[in-house]
Amino acid sequence: MQREIKKKVCIYGIAAVILALVLATAVSAGLYPLIEERFFYPSESTNQEPPSLPEMSEAIPVSVDALSNNPSSYNLKRVMVSGRVSKLGLVRGPYFMLDEKVWVCYLHTEASVDISNVKNGDYITVTGRFLTPDTIYAENIAKA
Image 1 (spheres, rainbow, N blue to C red):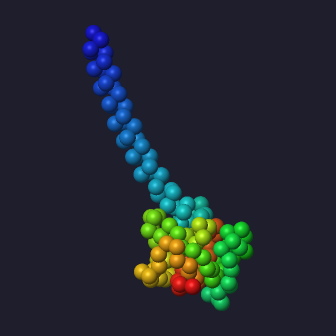
Image 2 (cartoon, rainbow, N blue to C red; image 1 turned 30 degrees about the vertical axis):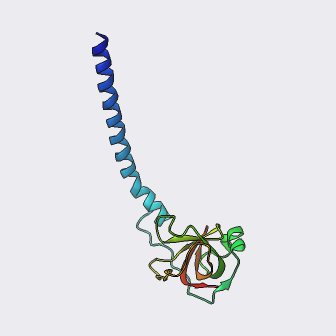
């Protein structure tokens, strides 16, 4: 009798684990489009186009600390920032950090920047468009 009870508990346990995995997969697959939509389209409607960017202008020289302390002042503006490279090759996607405070995207729809000679610890200057809260979309990267 105890053997049959243990057998049933084991079978129900396995079935519960399988059901939990199936539900978790279905829920995460169902949520992914919503997460993607919120990331790329901040508004509630997916039919709305992203805001048009202002014309490119002269790059504003700014420090990494100024960008991280007051990001809204530089939103959508072209900036020139110098700092130390970190997390290059350690995060998913074409990103690295400057001084552990600001992200740099070196491969995007606007431009592709060669970083073959850049490594962690290098002191570089990045020119590109800043988007709040903390990402520069690079147009040019040069060792300082």
